[in-house]
Length: 151
Image 1: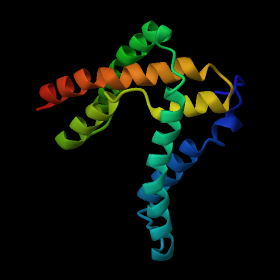
Image 2: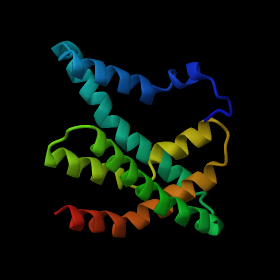
Image 3: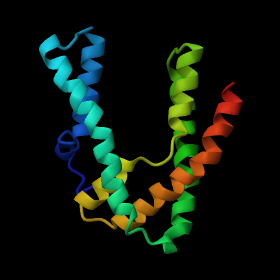
């Protein structure tokens, strides 16, 4: 993301830190104390609208001359996500509901957070925002198709 391949930088990412804590809490069957649960829920409820607002600001500057790369990203993101989900499903033992959810999650469009991270690290955020925008539009077709095959 930052142009450097340092393992330490990976563990500074809030997404990775949250994933590690989530896995540890789940594995050891830990629960947040009630005093921390309410503020955590409040932060989680406000973070999604803030991320969407940040993407909306970035989308005002989207130049759709990058529609080709956006279309490639719109196709490759769900396709690679589904392939990875199928690989994980073949390794671990999941219930049918979990299998369906993994495949559905894998088929989601490129994440909004990609545009924000591209902006943070000084990469071409307008191209990334174009991929997110076209990918989200493409999900109008791809997600119903995935749901049709899952059901």
